Length: 500
Image (cartoon, rainbow, N blue to C red; front, side, top):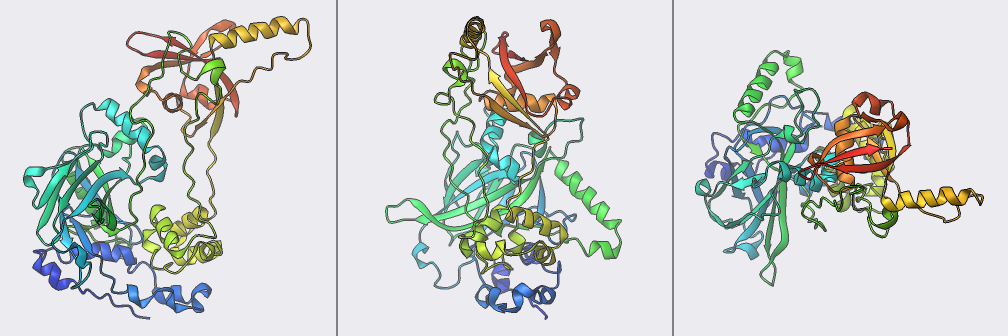
């Protein structure tokens, strides 16, 4: 079955001054359809598609999005056909994003002659980091006081109105613009990908980010809350000139591959087309500033009276579960696929509800998506969680705890069992890397403090000696070991932690 890719916007692309970059503008389209990554005739021959070939509705074949955003930076040539494009940026360098009006004649007439609002964000691509985004950004703010993650280069930008940067949202900027006029915004990303990587022994692999743009129109009250369009692309940010070196390295690696191997990779394009995605959810945090929570020179973590009654100190919020449910509608299933980095396959599963997707077998998913993405999608559908390598439990030691323990010892001389019924709360800490650095970060996160405030962590050994915690010691901890946390204050609000 032969498939042809129709390009209804060719004239508009030429008129917008992108003649030399026209081939480059196809990069997002190719990525969206996964063209060449698999045979469509083979996919449609699978049992799940034989009954209804309308699972790819013809109405969406020529779907035109109301807006198109073009990042003027080259895509990496070392990206496989199935994967999303990846673009390298230099830290602090200004990059143009062209805001193009793609509306057909008569489409969205209510915004004619009016302004729309676009919100730019730099967010984490890795879902594990998305769960802890607030803590990650607060840590960055602590290390880089006064700096922002994302800025607009206003003097170079064209057509933007009332640009704003919220001082509490370091990774977000917004502005108004008129779709009928030429609009280009120049952005600067100031954080580099390795700043959010766990430090090991050098040569750390940087985490990928996403540049996401959400556009809104005015409602009847004059507020820009009605969503029109969202799109995003994957980026990595390097120190100045590092992106150019990385692009050159990828290009040289691809030149050494055989023609057959090159067919498995996307070509590099001069510009990056942001692909459609679901709107970014608005999340309001209860506390937008780090709260050290220290109140005394000893036993200083503020967990409440009597060693942490649950009514005084809530646990950190658990990761938001994003399991697909049988009651999920096809529209919600599409958003779920976007959120879980399966955007390439949204067209294949256009009419699939949650129940339809959950009925797919492991073999079905692998046949449709290929081995790598198929296994990943199957595990995501089944909601399989990865068990941590080590779980330990920690409890705060307080003066009141010591007094209660002494009372228990005295009472046990006269009575059998625990007579005062004291209830102590422990907190679970899950470790993956099994390093002292990770333990420090987890304890700091648990008690809402900065890791920089923890100088050292010790374990109380025989005869009460304090042994410095090392990676090797953590690797020899018993599973579900329990510890009492004690703290010793130093100068400059730094502390020693003792595990008893």
